[in-house]
Length: 475
Ligand SMILES: [Zn+2]
Image (cartoon, helix red, strand yellow):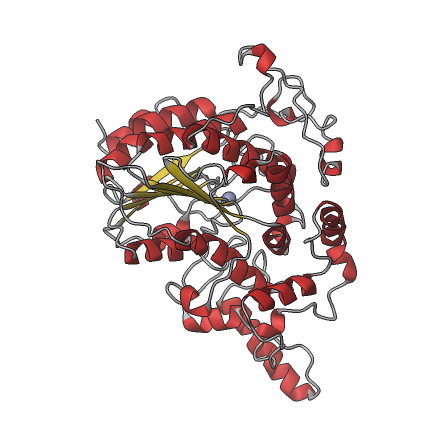
């Protein structure tokens, strides 16, 4: 708690508990969030926050601020808060392995998903009773009824797209309540009444972070692209209720921020800007220039191989002028890491430094705006953990009242010129996941000559920026 008197108040939603809950999401591969949590702790970054939200929760009512009632009721069906019999134990082997590693370092680590649920029910004072199954039931005794109910169930799953890459998984309601709450609770910091900043007194600026949030694809009554509840849309609604009249949402994820864009399409209060890969057949297949509207709905469709140089130009010449035109009071940034070089998509080749530099540049450019930074996609867990710890350190270092003395990511002896790439991941409970990657080196995904550095062909044309500037009429 070192920044009590700083110009900026920092808050983050993170904990052993939250990371273990977040890793129930199948595309997290049972480890993404725990690796991020592990590195935040290993670098001692949490010591520099003014507030840490460790036990987040959200209610059905909050989800109904955006989502459809029937959809939310299906998602929050308490009978899903358990391990179904048919789920083989091996599916949880990796998760359990991580929880045992976490337990070594943190006595608060939970050894089973059921322990997570018990803990959640305890701090939210919820009754620890598994309610009668309402929709999702595969265990009927009557065969005929079973047949029709299974039919119903299938049609419900289809209707809400709870299949394919959006399956309902064990402890689904717990996951949704915790992760949505981790974003929303950033606005409920005790003693801080968040309101638009007065330009003459910028002393109460707020920067919040939730690296487990940013579920930008979820629609009003449909799951999409590993996203079920759109924490971003609910956050934006909450900000509007708090009196913010101009909010910019900026999305750096490899994929189009379609769920947020669609929800805010007719809002005068919210500007959405999304940079994304837009190529034939690439999910979610939306986000073309034609789908943009004035200065409020801005799409920046990009090609394979997008790099730091492209991003620097785009930020300086298109993104910043577009935000300036809108004059926001609050900026929400989705910092998905699937556009980084080394991500399993292998579509873009942004560096950790490059993406971080651009995020910082935007926060710096608008000192009159509060900021919330959220996570998003990212399918190489050890790359995501590197990125979020680097980004967190840089935000704290740049905007905190006191600079953090030592930069753990650069070798100071080289004064930033001949940066050594031998910076190692610090010793911590999840170290083993970095051992195979050229012996714990931090920068291996973007180091020339490294076996994991795989530059891509860049299909983006230099004329790209001019085209966007003309389209959005920025001078
Ligand atoms: Zn993505």
